Image (tube, rainbow, N blue to C red; front, side):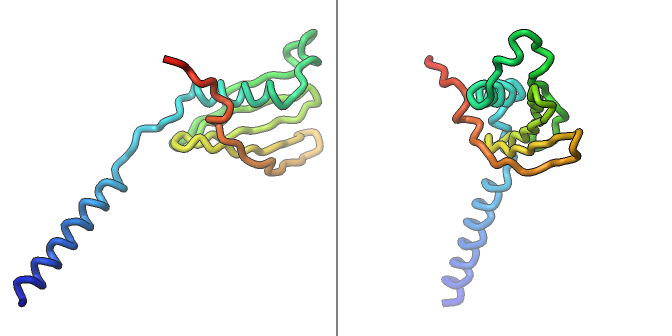
Length: 124
């Protein structure tokens, strides 16, 4: 009876350690810097009126910000002088938005989007 108990305990430990190593393995990021930029660019062009930038493109623009181990930072500047900071999770594509108006010293959370909703689906 003791042998069966030890065998079951060993089996449980073995299975538990196998499961643990799979979940702790490092997965490569699924979002590239180019994908982050493209998705945010598509979002901004679908949500904001860019007609003001036709005569003066410097009024509205999109640029990459600083990158961390887990996120890409993409910054949108509106013709009003407001900024929307997009923080793209490199693994999931979940993108947190923070709006700021530096001249008024205002900053607030503006929600989230799924970057994959704004990436063009490539047909192979």
